Amino acid sequence: MPLPPLPTIGQLVFTGIALFTCASALGVVLARNLFHGALALVATLFGVAALYAMLEAEFLAVSQVLVYVGAIATLITFDIMLTRSMMYGKTSPMNRQWGKSGLFAVLIFLALYGFVSSIPWPANAAPVTADESMIAALGQQFVTSYVIAFEVLGLLLLVALVGAVMLARDN
Amino acid sequence: MVPLTGYLLVGAFLFSAGLYGALARRNAIAILMSIELMLNAANINLVAFWRYGDAQADLAGQVFAVMIIALAAAEAAVGLALIISVYRKRKTVNVDELDLLAG
Image (tube, rainbow over all chains, first blue to last red; front, side, top):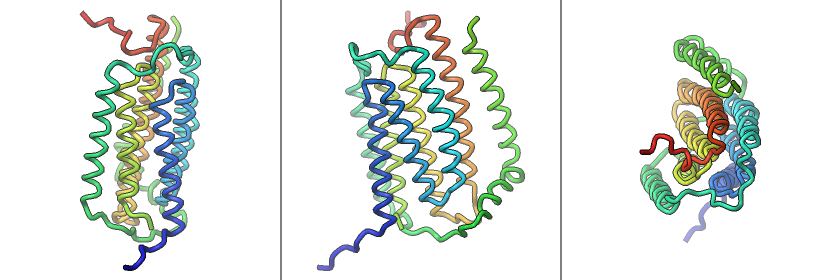
């Protein structure tokens, strides 16, 4: 019986990143202390950025670190401190339906697992050019094919941020 | 090369973890963090399908992922502002204590 082929470097790196990402995602939802959960969220977002880098989507990896780790994680940390909701320990961080929710989440994962592993996905991707032409093409798509979506997105971001300032203002 | 299944399974796990957090946590900030996990799971799937498809010619998967990141930023800003506003009025951010509309 022939031995299965040894894992390549890329597969080993992927396994490491995947385990790190999944473990810190569990930390986000299970942490009793909300601040520890926020730190685990930062770790998860870094892991996802590493996955983007492995998929050769460099622009997305950098955007992920800038927007998620730089902005959203900071915002969440500020909110935790402003609402003083990290001083826990006496009450459970879970509500009464945590058992049912856990069962439901496990069933969803098993269903997705069965679905994903039953389809013969392509095992290899075609190589792409490694220079900056991909990022240039991405930028070009934003101002040609997807220009309406791009403009609407900019408007949405403006309205959402003005709305957030109005909501959080102390009056 | 890692097979596409690997990325899809990481996405499925992140989604399930986020779903559990969104359903089971009491703190509104923790629920928002779980929603961010689910958005990231969808993004991993989009980028993975982009890479294993016609990556050089069709960049729609990456464009979609960039837009989801921007949407997530808007969603986090509005959600966290709402949480601060609710905390000022009710002195709590536990969603099972926010029962103003319950009869």
